[in-house]
Image (cartoon, rainbow, N blue to C red; front, side, top):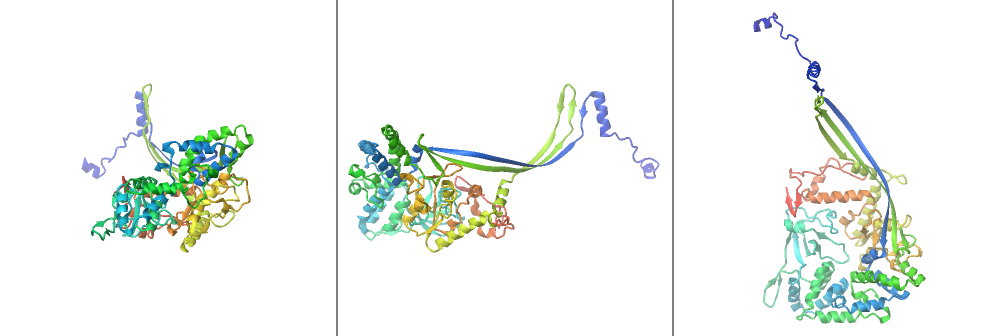
Length: 578
């Protein structure tokens, strides 16, 4: 047979094939079972959703009290007393409660605790001071220790206690600094009070990226070494300023023991009326204890508790009650509206945002099987890949020139960063109030509020409180509480508390918030970078990226393995996972 096939005597194929179509037709006619052919589908889906909403934030006066500054609360108490509210009587009644008296450390202001501890420090001789400090620090947490940056991984400083607040560049290996630990686990540097905060998360300590490196102190009397950093009066003041409030209270309680003279120091300080840079209020000498001795939270609790008593006592005096509400008027330039009938302020915010996604759909449909009266099966396989392109569109939008100017939003933002760097390079400080101004002031009053100021404690307080003297506007009818200070301030979209930023380093200038929704995306990316172990990427790796995102529609390379093929790790409970 093979020979016949080779010489063509017998055909190689007889042409008796059965087509799939004919077979399925026959199967359907013979048994009723229907089979369909295979199919495939390819789709590109672009989805776009636009949302427009109007938000109204309502804040009763009682919600403002916990966030008012010490000065604002004293002003409110003084004005309420002047209008006829029984402030002094209620205050004196509260002072009879043992738990509410100044002898309870919890009730005292942070500044009061700092001044008492400084007086205690100054009354020790140089020989006995080391022993006193060792006794003080061993009894409480938050002991100041000198730490050193190890060479195991990059260590970044954070300008606030948030995982999105890390700043470039990383600290050099073997950098030494004195840190104190807060109750939340963050390590805060003991630096000058006029400088910005610099802190480090607990993970650096747990992973060994920061290691204790004490400089021993030698006692000339017995030659013993104590592992404490040398403590000068200025450094002790900076330590008190940076220490956690719970640690301050522990130290203050410790010096109140019999073996120390802290109780006498506190009594003398209270009798003097807790002298300080602020004038305070003594209600014409009728207050048993000066209000400035107590913390702002203590005053706010008193005001919140007795606010109904104040309003009820002035209910029959319609004009006085209206003036009491007027204390919390933010003025004509503010976006917040005063509602005297319901004793609250309201803020209306109009916001629009969009969502965009690109999806690629691949579907293969297998043969449908249909048995009439029994079942029908429609099997298929599908692969869908979806991309969130909102971030891409937002990034392009931020780099397009605006109608009013050829510059993009990012270029204008970079100019602010450059101004900030030029400011701090001269030894001054930069007060960033742009975001707060846009949220709290009407258009026209939110411009040119970024200022380069002297790096002093007074200017720092003016920046943090957003002094209204810097607005340069005539009397706009603001009440006594907000006549000098703008904050507490709230984000117009979320209603969350926000505040100006005090910037003293060039690396912090690079972290100035971008005015817009792009800032939220940037912060989210920084949080993700931290969670995924961004520290394994070296600065030299950035130079090898083929696409670098700039202010003018350049592109950025993806984060991933650095040179040497060591991939990004992640932090799990403070440990790096590779």
